[in-house]
Image (tube, rainbow, N blue to C red; front, top):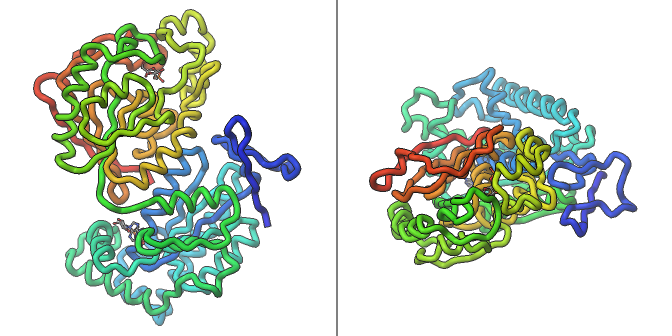
Length: 475
Ligand code: ATP
Ligand code: F6P
């Protein structure tokens, strides 16, 4: 069996102990020695137990960490032949139904094996009910034969309220029930679950040779078995932190700083007079958006975020991991200074802003790695308000929105704007609330060395305006 043992290097990267390094070992984008480990995460559970949602979140999380992952949803293969099945299609005594369902599973597994042939493709998620021991053994045998590890992830939930709300929230809008009466669709879906319940076998001691993680009642109990390598434990740890309680996350940059006014980057400057005014109106903006919900405020360790959060009447925590991207030798310079003093660096950063690392400083990729514990803590938490910096905010936003790495470092995030993110099944909703306090724009377009200048953004004028928009997280 291929197993990867990992250890921290002084640089904070995961390394294989050298005696165990094999010739074909490789380091992925986050500095993880992944050898040739490829994992098939096999979802297990009755319908409406959150399997697809969990699968989609894992793909997004891993993608954010530059670990190439993809979901293979057997339901979408099945829909090619049977787009609108009724519950009896899922009755195991329906021979034709059984044949078509097995064909869909085989097609998904075959595509997955082809996908694994590409060396960068590391984690596939096989999203189906995989509700019987024989189906699971078949998948394990197929994966073993191709040298792919398996990690079975079962979501087990008996809570009727959760199941009914899952049906209402996502199943009635499934393409399976397109154009159908919602009441009829809900009844049929319930009936479909009954068909699966007749044959469903939970993961148990008969499968003690398998690597698995059993999530019971949305994480109130988690059972893990034979989790052995770094990537598996990363995925399992992430799964253990997920919850489905409704909540929002608010993110804001600090108020305008003296460095923003002079166009300098980095540093640890105080707020400008307008920045202080933003700090004063921020409690009202938050109240307007969050009402009386309990909140915790997270800031960086830099003065400008602490000063911005100063008047907020909530518990506060400061995190070093939320400090701004370290611009190394360019700290304290303006973009125009950088272009003049380090022209090659200036150009290289524009060409690949995500990967460019300032001399003695960081890249966006580095920031993502140090933000991982923040994301983990955010997943565990409920309502959080984060007051942070431009680059850090872009990275956190990219996690929730599934933004592409070549786009996220260029995202425009104005000063004096509160962004509310509300995770929902299969999408994150976004709302922007602008304070009526002008500020310079620190956004620089690719190829320009823009001075930080006042931008008369009309949406910022007049009373605090709310612009709401909803964005789907790509699957
Ligand atoms: P199917 O087998 O029909 O594809 P599924 O198990 O994939 O069903 P999803 O479509 O993922 O079900 O259901 C999404 C719903 O599940 C969301 O409303 C989400 O809040 C909820 N959910 C997420 N995680 C869990 C969990 N661990 N247990 C139960 N419900 C969950
Ligand atoms: O100008 C404000 C600032 O937070 C700087 O301290 C930081 O270097 C910069 O923004 C990050 O933005 P970009 O990656 O677009 O240069």
